Image (cartoon, rainbow, N blue to C red):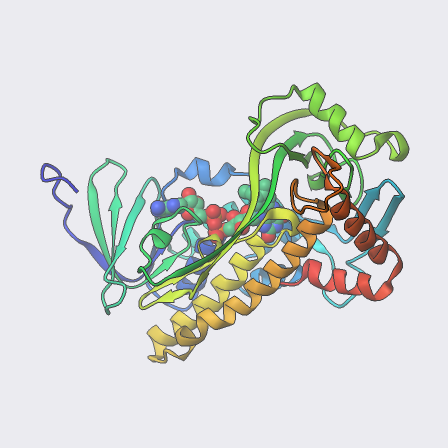
Length: 412
Ligand code: RFL
C-alpha cells in the first residue's frame, strides 16, 4: 500500500470472505448462501479465465452425491460421461480393472472442471451471490482475532480492505491464505521427482478406459474429457521446455509408450494445450488458524496421478460450510474446532493412495542406488523397475488387490 494510493473505504463487513472461485470456493459460496450466510467471493483472475481453465475431469461418486445433495449437479448429471474402467499397458501385455463395478462406490463422472466451475458460478449468482473478479487478495490480517480482514488489489489497481467474521482460503497453492499463515504453520512437502507434460488434444478418446502405460521410456497416460477432447500425459525430462517437441514427435512418442502397434492406433488431433506439472504434493497442518480456514489446493496439493484434488476440494467445502453454518447460525463452534482433523484424515488417505499410484506408474529417475549402474533416462533404475513389475503383477492377479485399488481409486 503506498501513500499516494490510500486504502479505499473499508468494504462492508460480511460473515465470510471466500478467497478464490475454483471448485472449493464456489461450492462453499453456494452452500453458505443456502444456509442464509452472507458471503463474498474474491477472485484474482478474470471471469473468462475462470470459465475456460481446463484442469480436472474425473469426479468421484461421492463428489457427485455432494453436488446433487445441494442442487449443484445438473450439468454433471446431464452432460458428464461415466467411466469405470482402467487399462494398464505394460511390456507383458494389457489388462483392465473394472473399478466402477468393484466395491460399493461406483464409476467416476467425467466432466471438465471448467464446466463444473461454470455451473457452480451460475448457481451462485442465481442464489444472489456476490463475486468480484480481477480482485487479488494480498494478505489475510488478524486471523487470530474475531474480526479478520483481507487486503486486496482491486480491478483498478487500488488497494482495499475487506472485513469478515471468517476468511475461507480457497485460493490454491500460491494464494494469499497460504502466504498469511503464522510462522508456526507446518507445510509437509514431498517431490515425487517426476514431471509430466500434460496435453489437451482435440481428438476423441482412443480407448473406453483410463489408459496407464508403463514403458521403459517413461509413463504415458490417456484420460477422456468429452467425446471430442482427450487428455494425454507424457513423463517428461524435468527442465525441458513444454514446446521442445513438435506435435508429430509427441504423437509418435505417445504411440510408442501406449504400444499402439499392439493395441490399436491413437486418435490424433491438434494439441490445444501443453503444460508441465512437477508431481509434487504437500499438506498444510492444521487447516484452521483462528478465523482463517483453508480448503482445496490451499489446504493440500496432490499429484494428479490419481485424480483426487478437485474431489477433495468439494468434500472439504461441504464440511467447512456445515461448520461455518453451525458457528454463525447457532453459535456452536464445535464443527470449526474439528474441521482440520476431519479433513486431514481424508487428505492423508488421498495422499497415501496418490503416492502409491505415482510409484506404480513411474520409477523416479535416480530414485535409488542399487549399484547395478544400469539406469535408463525415463524409467529409473532396474531395482525400481522390478518392483513396479511386481506391483503390476499383483494388481493383475490378486482380486483382493484389485478390490483395494477400486475402493481407493474413487474414494475421497
Ligand atoms: P483452484 O481450482 O486452483 O482455484 C483457486 C482459485 O483461487 C484463485 N486465486 C486467487 N484469488 C484471489 N486472490 C488470490 N491471491 C488468489 N490466488 C489464486 C485462482 O485464480 C483460482 O480461481 O483450487 P480449488 O478450488 O482448491 O480446486 C482444486 C482443483 O482445481 C485441483 O485440485 C484439481 O484441478 C486437481 N486435478 C484433478 N482433480 C481431480 O479431482 N480429478 C482430476 O481428474 C484432476 N485432474 C488436476 C487434474 C489438476 C491438474 N493440474 C492443474 C496439475 C489434471 C491436471 C492437469
